Length: 145
Image 1 (tube, one colour):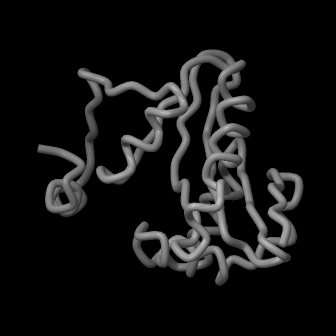
Image 2 (tube, one colour; image 1 turned 90 degrees about the vertical axis):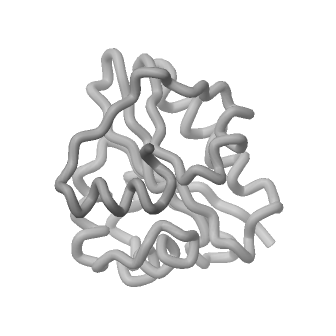
């Protein structure tokens, strides 16, 4: 059993239906595969983790490549958690992005402790602007007060 971590150079080999299913299984909501493809293709950095050829992990980031990067949609398939794949993914994310300045993360509330292991700290000034519907969903999910 092997875990292989690929970057954006392998984006043409991604099965977007499979990635959409991975996001949903990981608790990040069901998303249309065409919009998932659009988001990952428009991101500065992407990571794809494969266990024996099966997509089991992903993340993406946007960056100005100077002062700041924003990492999002970090997920490891629930049945693959606890094997160190998330650790490998996070170590590569931090190694790749930290030379480009600060790294901001958008996390589901129950995973914030995991990210603290990799040097992430809570912001006291973080804010969000969105539609009323999106703000309601964020509040209901525990992202905002």
